[in-house]
Image 1 (cartoon, rainbow, N blue to C red):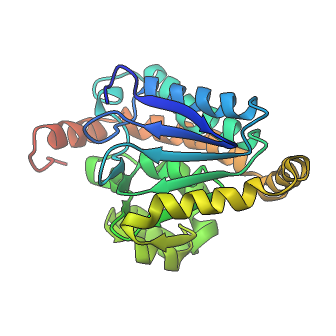
Image 2: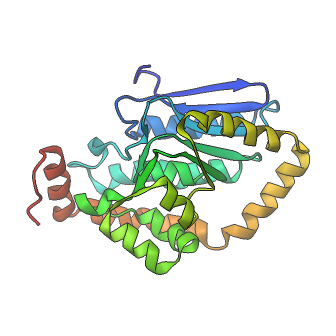
Amino acid sequence: MTSDNPVAYERAGNIARITLRRPPVNALSLEVIRAVVAALRRAANDPEARVVVLASAIAKRFSAGLDLDILLGKSGAEIREFLQSLYIDLYDAQYGLGKPSIAAVGGAARGGGMTMAVSCDVVLAAESATFGYPEIDVGVIPAIHYAHLPRIVGRHRAFELLFTGRVFTAAEARELGVVNRVVADAELDTEVIKLAAQFAGKSAAVLRMGRAAFMRQIDLDYRRSIASAVDDFCNVATSDEAQEGLRAFVEKRAPKW
């Protein structure tokens, strides 16, 4: 496992697997996001792939979120380039995938890691998995989650999660509707494969057309919402307060707001 190849693509039968493998915590760099998007597009164009699984090769970690090097001391244009990939390109790749996608969350998912997980159609989590939106604690905002989380969990519960930054368990994520199902840690991969096999057993043509119809119905103004989220994030991330919060996190000290 090496950061030289932080995202692996492989297909076993009709299941394509995209695996994050950037030690130690699968921090999301521009390279990683672009590799995930490329893998999704590869799966979309693979006639033998009927289901796509997004997983992590790192024990107890799905993704810790954004690589802070993307934000520290960067211009708005540089940050925008990254967010174009994470928010827009990832969404577009999932939207046009043409087959079901399953996130297998076997460990901690935070910030941008949450973005990666919930971009999928279905999210399965191990019992020990944890979730959270810690951006507020370092002076930035999880802008894309403002667009979708209230629709899933309701306005008031979304506000609490997004503005406290607290960690929550897989069980709570299931109760909130953020994940579909929670399974024993040792059974996560087995359950993901079982679900993938159920999807793969359907008509590929009907799944493709049905999923396209489903995506059109749920999209509404979501595409426009995530476009504005890019602006919102850039405006905050380039502020003096955000840069102080990020430096404090790196230096392991309390921020001086």
